[in-house]
Image (cartoon, rainbow, N blue to C red; front, side):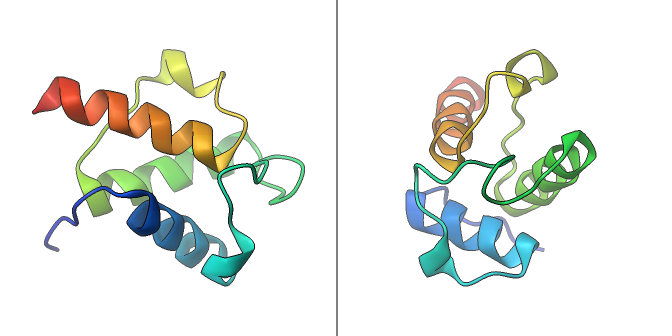
Length: 84
């Protein structure tokens, strides 16, 4: 699978795809646990889905501080720059 360029839109679309919801339902402020009902195993699975899509790995030490889809995107942006 060819990796996509990481943008807010592509990240939002991949999160929506993973969860089986419309992209319009996912905003930067959407809370992963409360609004999207993702548990700790779900966040790990979502992370694996996003690594496959974008090739960006967020260290497990940062995962606990991710609460919203926007937080997830920003963490991926930070680590994309480090890996580049």
